[in-house]
Image (cartoon, rainbow, N blue to C red; front, side, top):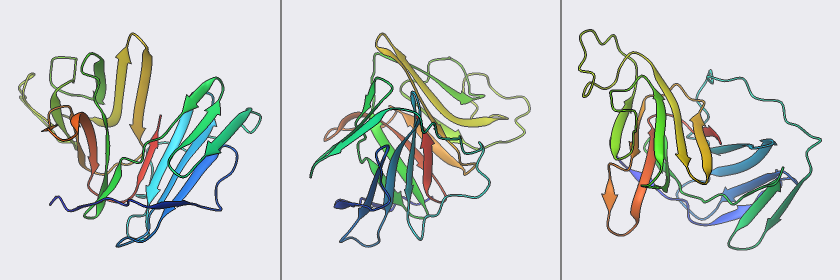
Length: 206
């Protein structure tokens, strides 16, 4: 997929938000994007990043979880930041989401000291840090256990484990794409990881 990234830079609060959902809409750019960050259950959050030209892909791989409306939550926002506090967890979402041709990308900071695992069937070793992966599926007969990618099953799940705890990112899309877990470098931005989805808008669970 050709890389044609567009970064929405100015957001306004949307009327779709509530005490457990941050809802933003980008303004003043080539096209408008809707961004939501929602507390679903204790320790479970959902992000959606969509536009008219980037709808959520059909047939998500997980059923939409039922929200726990009994949770006590609070939401605060100002011109530059927002935070949701729920179940003893304070979440401060970054807006590192960009449109990329017919798909989207999500950039985030890479912790080089953490252990990164997941992705379904991937070549050895177990730690995925500083590596790049294709998200696709193929009948890979006679593969090289250290080099062949993709393998039979792919799961867009990345788990980060460190001394401070464990965080998982899961995409509900079956779309092809790539995960760079620190294999890319940019002197202006430092160490990062990026999930690129070839088609449609983004739905992620944390």
